[in-house]
Length: 244
Image (cartoon, rainbow, N blue to C red; front, side, top):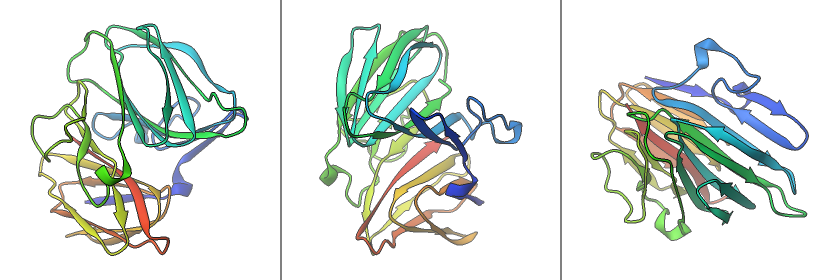
């Protein structure tokens, strides 16, 4: 079963210093029927204005994955990490028993757009941890390679894949027009696919669906998921999350 959620169906949050599109209940958006998808608790598409950001705040027992789409994101935490993350960087933070962190835009002029995903860990109380890695375009072009993973099974991972404490795998492919990828979804798993840019055609036994930027697909009990690039601009960028 494939359920497509269009970009317009997301919840828009506009606070001046940050513009966000929420795929699931979050902050001022409370919809019990759209609280999560498996262990995926949040999927937020954020754009921070120059010199703005989230001041240092606490989390615990969450696996938080961020992906910088454009601009530069600055991360700081009470584990001693302070780093600027350029576009193409994936960040993974295990909040575990408790962590304080901030995410800000250091630029004087340019906004930063980044995705943030929250996952429920497989078990609570882990020691907090943080890591990040920049993945070049060529490592993701026309490939389904997990760059974040806490699963022992599934697709072969990147040697630089970031480990988290949740049974999930996350790919960030760039797909050229006319190229096709096939994701072999298992019967007891779910797939969440979010289109960042370009256009995609996805299909299985349920039929064929066309995705535009900001659209997502929630897939359950599917056959192999076929994903084809259809952008007239040459390529499409998306996120694919495999979850129980």
